Length: 253
Image (cartoon, rainbow, N blue to C red; front, side, top):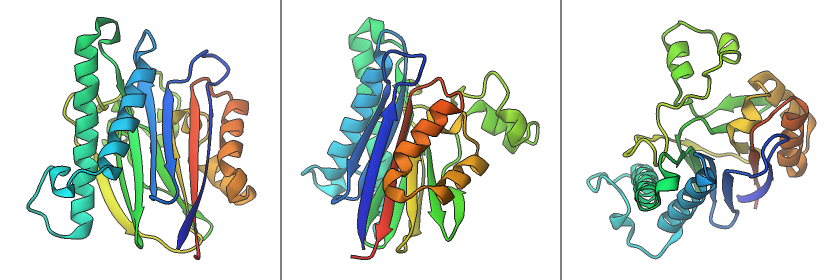
């Protein structure tokens, strides 16, 4: 199987700068989206550091045993998920060091979601509220769960997903790379199949477009045009944040 990917980003209609960062490597099977936060352009710095660190550690020349938190695991899938956790925490440490060295960047941080496809498995990891979705067999599934105060309220039964979309504090993060120090990314592995379409995105896509509308767009658009279509639809639906989407299609080699 091989991968075909496309990406699109837009600063949105309100902001002059784009604090989202992303990475696409079809051959290496690695895809990253990071949505930075912080004043004085610090969001851009944090998201850039996160993407650079994660890709460097997952694709660099370091011994894989030196790039995982738990060296006792032996299963290949467990090893990859440990490497994802290590990369996220190294990114967090680097961002905090930069913030300490540059006072105007104090408080900067970023979300991060990572998709690593190797062999017949898709390994995902995320911190924050950037998301990863899978379109398979005409059905859209969300593979990540937001690290937000609102998601905690949903999990506790105090808010419905529809109510959560309207509350003012819906983007308050409970975890972020950098700002919150050491992180506990959620990780998972699932088998891939020809025809699968994965999407990584910042909340600039999912704030204005709920999962029902996202599924409609997946149904309507061809994969090569899907990333651009999602971003343009988010802008048209009133999205004000930076907006980024990566779409990856699994095809027969």
